[in-house]
Length: 192
Image (tube, rainbow, N blue to C red; front, side, top):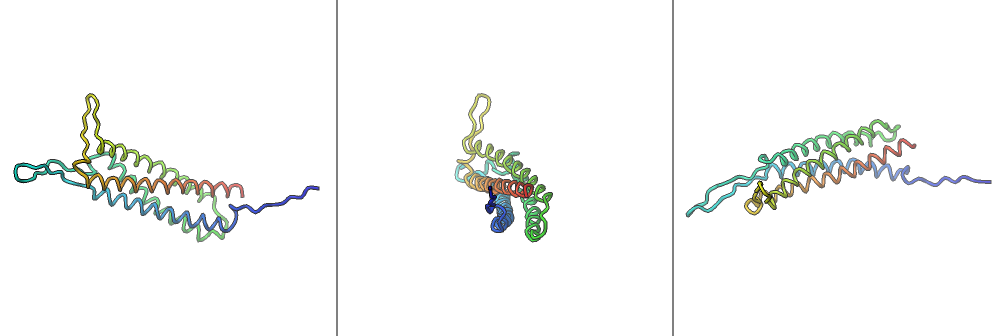
């Protein structure tokens, strides 16, 4: 005679639900912080480049994020990410407050879709800005194309742009974790 023993499932325990709720809201707040940091550092990343001329210095160029379409795109992506993270954090917080009632699979599916789209959008902005950053750092020397590196001349600009891009990558990491958490929660609700 066979007896069925049911083992407790870790993912259905109250501990897992509280961990999931805290992680959902906490990671979204981190994304808001990283996106805001990225926007603020990119907006302040400008520098005039001076060259010595006789006894004075003259401004010969200005490094600014708006001169590059890749950095401009990343700035817009970070703004969109910040707004969607704020709205989804409000939704996630409300879902944690009403988690004692029957969970709505549609809300979790909506969060999964938004997280997935925002993750994809964020990595595209990071890739565009990273490509511009590599050209600014190393330059390009190919037949027919010659772009000089700007970072040896505009160190403050490059440092601020690097901090901004690193903050965007940190937001991407949080969004990736949120996407996996949302998918896991949706899978558990679907099999419940």
